[in-house]
Image 1 (cartoon, rainbow, N blue to C red):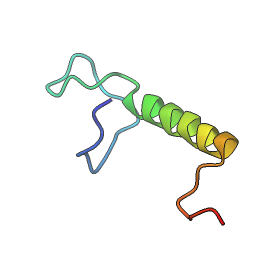
Image 2 (tube, one colour):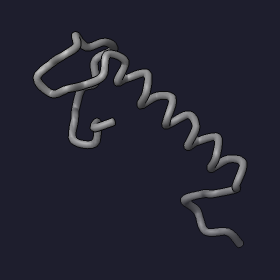
Image 3 (cartoon, rainbow, N blue to C red):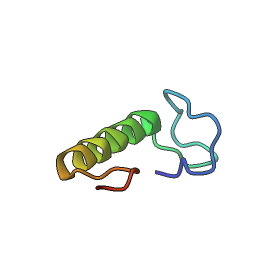
Length: 51
């Protein structure tokens, strides 16, 4: 995934394309973020310091 510097991520991309984005780039990013959120919730990771 290369969405770090992108402002807009389209739902679908033609493939091949000039930026070599995967056809389902947005789905892959959303899946990754969902997995990361689940991990953080299970492991108790928070932006706030623990008391």
